Image 1 (cartoon, helix red, strand yellow):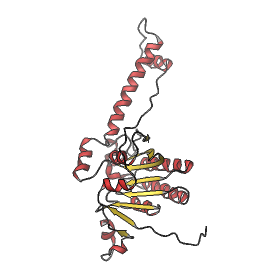
Image 2 (cartoon, rainbow, N blue to C red):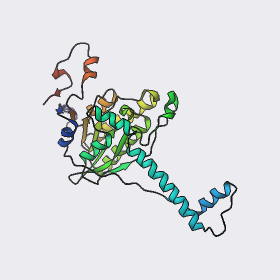
Image 3 (cartoon, rainbow, N blue to C red):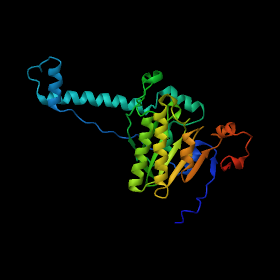
Image 4 (tube, rainbow, N blue to C red):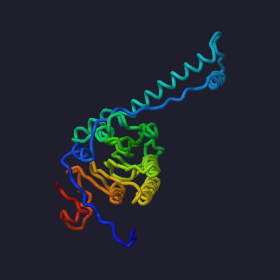
Length: 278
């Protein structure tokens, strides 16, 4: 390949709605993801009991102790899983619907073949404690990541969710993980972008997260297909990264106001980085 030859810039394409945009990528509903549960050993159960100054009741076997703890842990994980599936709560999902938009998980379910989505890092939370952020924690943070299939072919993808889809250090690690996996197996990466950019509360940690993503955009170029879908207003790193991918699709009116507001003069459509309305 001639390294001196410039890579042609593919134009952004608009579709009429989120559903029709995802249908361009061959859509189908999916089932909820599965999760694994690890049981506690009988030894750890007795150790925990002893540390509280209590002795197991007569006749209580190690097996009974282990089963009781396993059931308790299973229930706790199931409760966290249900909370994670709500994506920040029913009110946040309802707010998305009021805007005529889908939630992160709804977008994934439309895009992938039924029952093929395997989620990564569902229970990860951001680590920021400044500006009251320790009170605003949700399982999975602001992005849903994993892999699935489209017409039987494996893809890795991420879909941005709560906190305005803003990127935290944990958010970045989740995206980098699937990008690394995609390069390892030679599968496409699809980003369903709906983000205001870096999470300002995390400062340079968030910016460093974008640096890691940009690096993988470069490393993935020419190795695996990178596809970006702009599902809502995006700014900062949330548009810099898609600009380095191979294909970009946009929901109509999703929109390009950030570019217009930043421009010193009113740009025309051809100046908006090749945005085309269909």
